[in-house]
Amino acid sequence: MIKRNGSSFVFILLYLIIWATLKATNTWLIAHQVDVAVAKGAHGLIWVLTILSYQITLKGFENPNPQASIRAIMAGFMIKFFVIALAAFVYIFLQRKMVNLPALYLTALFYILYTTIEVRLLLKQLNNRSDAEKRSTP
Image 1: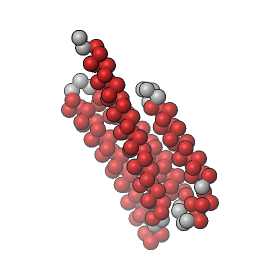
Image 2: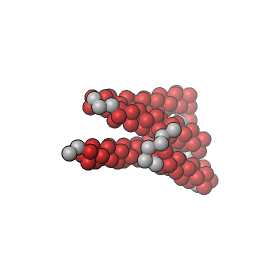
Image 3: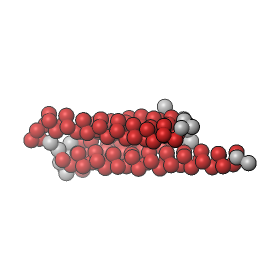
Image 4: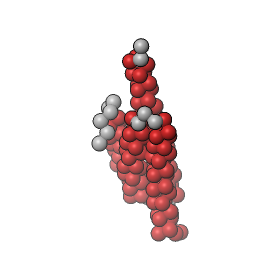
């Protein structure tokens, strides 16, 4: 798992907060016609993909070649985006007319939330690295 600058704690904490919120608002979500099983499954998938994307990008930052960082950022985005898109298409194909749009909207919110946190943590990591390089250079 991730061990740099407490980022694993942030991802685990965010996962637990969203999971607890889904659990606490279960009856409210059902009353508003949200398929909670779809929302929980999507939440878990997005969490795993975000951690994978974060690790790929961090590994790219460690490479001295700046092009490797760009490739890592793009690879992380592409993996996360296409796996989520594939999962959405499979869900839509299997459900046909029974697609639960509120659950898909909630999934999009999870994607935005996790991506925002991931980018903030990556920028913090990159800034910390840049600051360390500036201090070590005479």
